[in-house]
Image 1 (cartoon, one colour):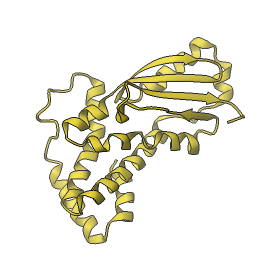
Image 2 (spheres, one colour; image 1 turned 30 degrees about the vertical axis):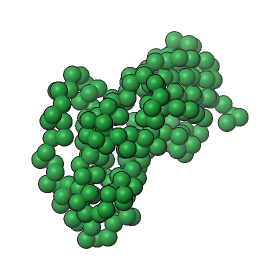
Image 3 (cartoon, one colour; image 1 turned 45 degrees about the vertical axis):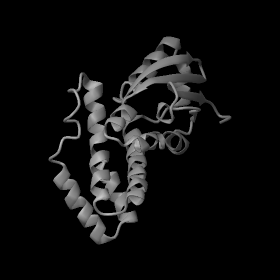
Image 4 (tube, helix red, strand yellow; image 1 turned 120 degrees about the vertical axis):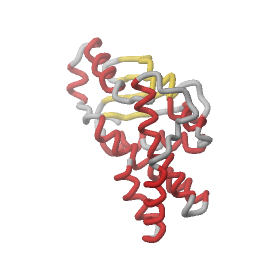
Length: 198
């Protein structure tokens, strides 16, 4: 996340503010934001905490340098930039012809392999067709962890890159996400469609 953070911070902060933020961030690295929580129980918990840790430290560092409203705005921009970077590095470009050449079992296996790369979520495959897939994320650890840190207001920032990523980097896929856990719903619904008529 730090690479994405530096790019965003240069846009929002003066040189002096940037230096002060980085110094404070380095100082905060010695602290453990999860010290008052039970230990992580599995790989997904550990991965989610690792992903969130930098966002928390950056936000706390910014709060020592700029006023809180701007700190929230900058942190949300950093989270979105980092999420786009993560998605680009995690998901291959999906080839519609390749997906359509798979049988139902092959499509399910492919989707499962891709979805398992996201440590923050538990998911359920609701619909698997030749051109349409519907996935319910039944648990997202980010809102849970952010609530523990009293940073609930950052939850939706972690969802902010999803649609933009598919619009920019997945030309064969159209995605809709009518609701999310971060906005108070029971699950996040992702509807994916493949085809030329997107």
